[in-house]
Image (tube, rainbow, N blue to C red; front, side, top):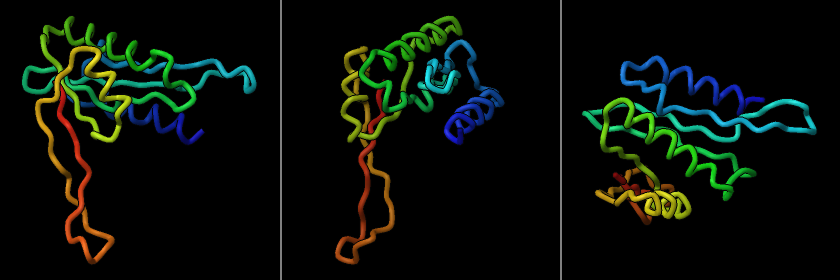
Amino acid sequence: MAVEEGCWQLMWEISQRASFLPGATWLLQSFDSKRQRYSSCGTIQGLEKDGLGAFQNIAISPEHRNKGLGELLIRYALGGFSLAGLSKAYLEVTAENRGAVALYRRLGFDVTEEFFLERPSLNSNHPRQGSPKSAIS
């Protein structure tokens, strides 16, 4: 239940931003026949930033991946950006998330920038380590 509450909390927090775009924000739910209730299985939030659509928190729960739901959410969000008068969109993704990167490329997104986020090393032999991130638009 904590994950479900977290999804709703995240949706509420993003909806309070001035740049929030309701038409580009979606929460997918699936009916769980064992528990006889609906539960969140995917989410995407859209914001406007500097005249561009900005994707936030694209996520599909592990048991619902590889079913086309990520593509569905992105297409709906792109439609919301278009209705808001935005003609371009961007997102950020960790380079290690190969499935997501492949999906974004298949949908026509291009890598425009790669950068590393620095973090303190846990190993004294390596003073700087990072995780590569890509900005895709």
